[in-house]
Length: 92
Length: 152
Image 1 (cartoon, rainbow over the protein chains, first blue to last red):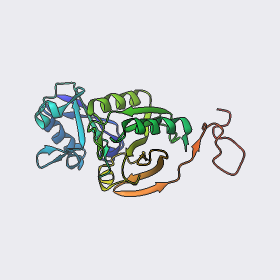
Image 2 (image 1 turned 135 degrees about the horizontal axis):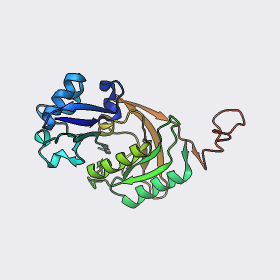
Image 3 (image 1 turned 120 degrees about the vertical axis):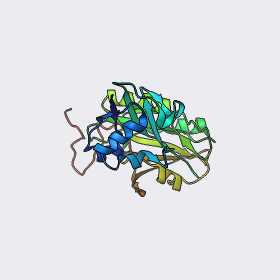
């Protein structure tokens, strides 16, 4: 089960500058574990205490996983996982 | 350096959404030219006077569009509607586009907006001078008289 993962600019230091990498797994959790095996350090940028960071957006086949199971979201074979930093801030 | 028409569009967006914070992107070619070209206003999913966050689905659509066009977010802008247009602690801790210019539009004065630009990298803020030009073609960057991109 292989997925294509799109890596945002800020995390490309972990992938040697690559915008897209392959990872194995049938759930987002497994995909991230496989990513970490090949690109050490990346998991900490995505997950804390067993949950996705609040200010990272992850999409599986263009669906925001916040609404489809979070780390348990299913990743179909040949699917795409897109990681984007949330763009957020504010006066306070 | 930024085109006057893009500034006008950002300020108009900020005024329209006042007192809520407005946010968006100015996209430009991914060729190192560092020139914003395309105005992309975004929905503030928080609809708040003190916080903004791009709507996640709109952001995905816009980022895919930029990718397809070989564009990058040259500018990420938002407004501060009651406070100084200086990056707040929240702005600094959440900034995740190391190559973007973070532009703040202050709209607390109804008659006179304030425009400031910053780099925010690893929690470090650097203010940068903003030069508003009619167009990039005839904007001079040095002491010579050769326009940028002459002949292109």
